[in-house]
Image (tube, rainbow, N blue to C red; front, top):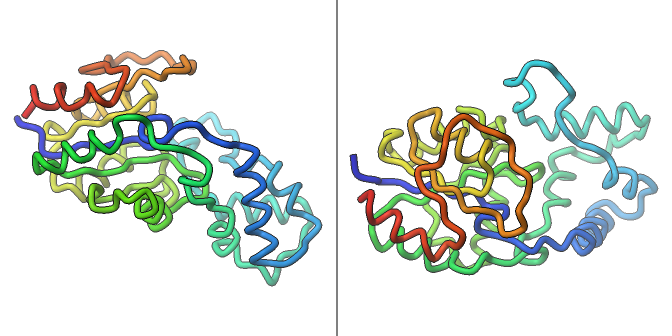
Length: 237
């Protein structure tokens, strides 16, 4: 069955060179601008806002950032009655173009997909970013017209490799699993998560050699550079 949709991971697949220190400074500036001076900003940014440890694999993939943040404030005995959690979340969502850069070949790969009438969906694990913030990132990159849909783990409520995030991408693109390809740099989150639902998967091998979890499903193709992607997709059209 020919490919009709291409799903892309974002971090280290389309965007790279994260400026961690600059990101932190910009988050602090945003918090002060939004809420004034507070004595808990540094502690909040140092906190581990993450799912609770659980032996249940599926539950470990549940995404509930606002609840986790609210629980951290409660457990830290910090009163924030005048601070809405979602307003806080939005404030610390720093635009990607300020703290990262496009991977070489990103513009060309997205343009190729659009020129061949393929539906492009960003499928991304995010802590603070919801679908709206992700869309704004790509507006700032000047690539909003190349993106048809966005599925963020924050908005869908499940992180990759949970099936729900891929099923949402399939629904939005109007594609069957055999008509879709996932492109990403993580073997478990991107490759394994997609292939167990019947999608094809292209592994963009990380340049930095990031450690990978062992998986029992192999990618259908492996690339080292996004400029190699059109040739792979052309074979499947």
